[in-house]
Length: 392
Image (tube, rainbow, N blue to C red):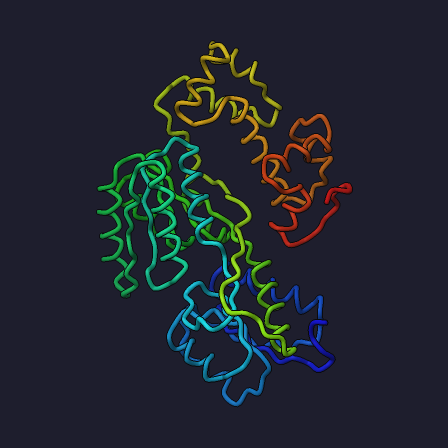
């Protein structure tokens, strides 16, 4: 049985300055609410915090930490308490850890650009962080599957932001176009978007940009709005708290990272493009996107572009690697996913809104397409269970 009747005093060395970390804290809070018996210690600090004087004299039972600096690593070791690491840096490799699956984030980004006809890829990251380094490596590996490299721009947080932005402008200008740029996190994505404005590069037509974290405020304040891959931070924080509870109860927990897959790609204007040389395919894609909410059919698409099914399928396969029917299904399922993640609508209401025959049909199609039922997907994305008409 996890936990005990005695109150556990747990310090949270997790920054509060970004959406990813706050998501982790939500997950920890959910674990504590479900299991009780914890007293949490947290102060506001930054990602690379070096001042831990607020814990001087603290007599606690365990630590949940984003160990992103040598100072943080030394401090956690000095405490000598059960601890779980929430960073990919692995500066204290003897600890168990919970972290986002960075390779899957990289693969999703490449696939996101490739689905839109982009075959040039680039990465903008921050080498100070292990998760950024891992995303850069994974992105380059997955880009090679399309026969192209993925050059990397490394941000230099020296305090001279204008100089760093000048470098970024020159780098972006020199990339082959159109290009898909994965920014290691949303703040880096903002930097890329600002540099594109200075360089007079059209977003997303010349430079498509996607970040990571899906910080809603940053994403929607950016101009244009920033697409982003959403990690499952709540699940990660919850798992880390569970591991720590087991350790504080005397259980031996093996070191090493437990990787949590991301939950979805949130498409906004910064990467919402169709880069296809074939004007007929581009026309068909636009028609599908504009009418997907009305249950568009293959026949209607064929009538719109004036080609036979075989002729259009051959063009789709050449440029996108999938048929017209597969593209319609992909767009429709993305619409279902967006409504599951952004509303509390029931399955019935979503199916009616999108023109599906009934909720059961939509649910079966969604599970076949994503590998997750609508209910499972919604719980993964939101961390909550709302009225779902009996779906699991």
